[in-house]
Amino acid sequence: MDGTILFADLAGFTALTEAHGDEDAADLAERFYALARTALEGEARLVKTIGDAVLVVGDTSSRVMSATLRLVQAAESEPGFPALRAGLHAGPVTERGGDVFGATVNVAARVAAHARAGQILCTAPVAKAIAGLDHLRLQSIGAVQFKNVVEAVELFELVYGDDPPGRDVVDPVCRMRVDPAKARARLEIDGQTFFFCSSTCEQAFARAPVSYRRG
Image (tube, one colour):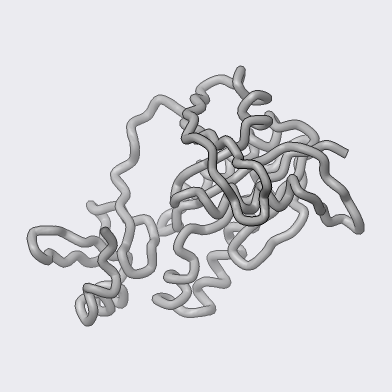
């Protein structure tokens, strides 16, 4: 069968687990799974959850992309929720026992892993199928060579909506999105202000700022 595969995960989940503990991380993952199930429509279905990631398959790229956008927007509306990253690829898929296998699945996983926090990436077959959808813009980011994939894969970034980017910044410790106006704590170091979701993250940063500062 042919299908479109979506991998989406929580950016910075390892850092979040380290900062807030296993219980909070597990609660967040469960909430993410629930958002993914709610985002699905039509024949698109949740195949499985893998740690902080979800794997979705559908017959049409437009349906899977619509589900992806609903999932990303739902996560953005959740207070104190990490940014998502997502990757989509379309092609032949083998289904066995409710799971899916094949090169298409493997490429989709690599595309998702290549995405930055808050970024949706897709391959050329998906880009071609969704080119006519409203409020979507596709920006080519060039071909990327993935490990164990013979040919380079052309990737496109999805840009949607007309609103300007949000004001959220990223907590440097747990990588959670933070509204600067509502940040629980902040520190200024060398003229740069850092915002935190909690005093716990602020204190961890203050003890070892070099460990968390990213270029």
